[in-house]
Image 1 (spheres, rainbow, N blue to C red):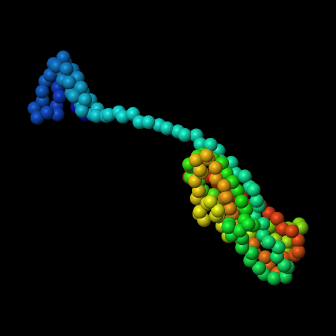
Image 2 (image 1 turned 90 degrees about the vertical axis):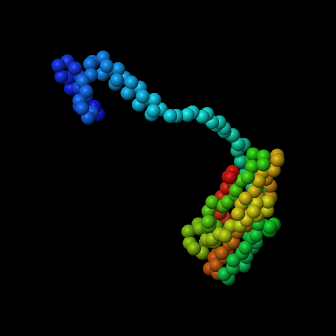
Image 3 (image 1 turned 135 degrees about the vertical axis):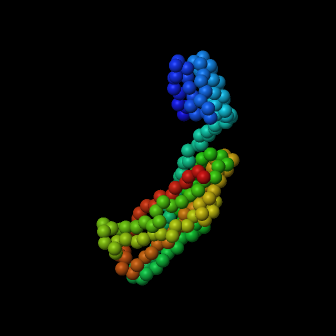
Length: 182
């Protein structure tokens, strides 16, 4: 910051070694030149345009062609029943989506409970977990839609934990298969 004083109508700039006395016109010309020089030094910018793109993908449509169905079991003993995705009892899905795009399938729930009757007592509940993916999906659920936007043979297996105290009856429940673009 420059401190300026007027002495007998002249402008004095005291920051210099010896005070200078500058008449009014010369002082404003000097200030203008300094301001112009400093502003040109601060401006150093460059502009570059860039492209922006967006692609709207076809929505994924899932169709269940077969539900996960465990074979009949006898009452009175603990038994884990495993259905692999290669089994004829596995859940089967097909899907349509964007051609040649990768997607991932998964089961939302880590476990579900099948119930019979009122389903309120533990003897009326069977836990299903350890869902396994397969068919045209990897075990991690990865797949790629074909050139027509189709994916079929998307299979899901799982494990039913039957307990000796589970009552006789038909048990049912639901799980959620999700397919999303990568």
